[in-house]
Image 1 (cartoon, chains in turn orange, purple, green, blue):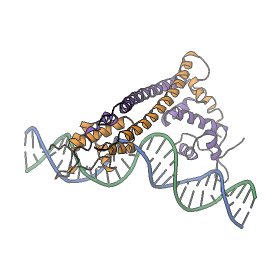
Image 2 (image 1 turned 135 degrees about the horizontal axis):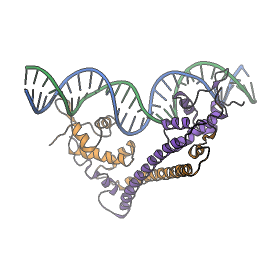
Image 3 (image 1 turned 90 degrees about the vertical axis):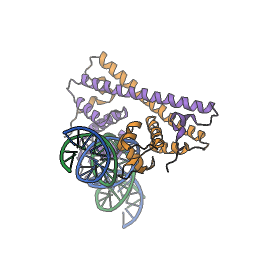
Image 4 (image 1 turned 120 degrees about the vertical axis):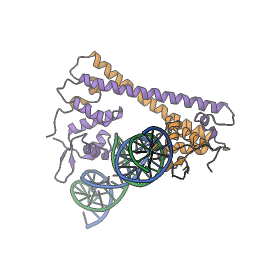
Length: 140
Length: 140
DNA sequence: GCTACACCCCGTAGTGGCTACGGACTCAAG
DNA sequence: CTTGAGTCCGTAGCCACTACGGGGTGTAGC
């Protein structure tokens, strides 16, 4: 059985070394065996689990959601429905974030374009933010 | 000159009361005058400034960016170019966030649809996350 | 054996942008 | 005079890390 150290695990999974210890501390990944010198020793299974965590984080799942996913991923569970439900909820979050950001982007785009076109006294971007009066009546 | 208390300011701008005090602490908004009883007293100018901050936060500008925007919004400055530059950079951030999220959404959508279609042994969502082997070799 | 250097150990503190808590006051209405 | 709402302040908590400091360990070259 080949065992690797935390640094190797970190570089293989792309998870920051200190983040690995953090995940262990919060119980997201199990505490591994230790060598005689106290070093953590990980195995292939740990690499797989941490890669799973990392991909889920990349997809924007938060730690608690990942805890649930990991539990549902235990073998022999009829979990697909639950996983699907979680994924759909998460997808909803993502989609509303997307439309929020799209509204922001178009607002900003409009203001920036007005900037290019107009030689007005006030800046259209600041105008959108309601800045026209900022500083006009300084605090006494 | 009409003066309002912090609670009124908070409800008028939609900024949480404790957040107003936080903004004062970090110097994003100026410390207002105090009444004899120690209560903060705000004026129309403060409402405008805080509304500006709030709109900028809603647009996703971070505190340091807002500090810059506020400085650029001081009257009499030839600031439009700088504001535009900042806004364009911020727009770039937003757009890359949008495309990140869109990639995630389509990944998730694909997996979820496979879930609906297939009666496979493994869950497509978990498969995408590489979970097929999770728990298969439990730690000793 | 000695030195240099990378790697690992641990606990703790800092990040951003708030939000909550607790105990003390002030104020207006009934 | 009591009640309830509003305000004061400092501090601690939130999330998901990331960094720091001071030590121990492993390995390679000389």
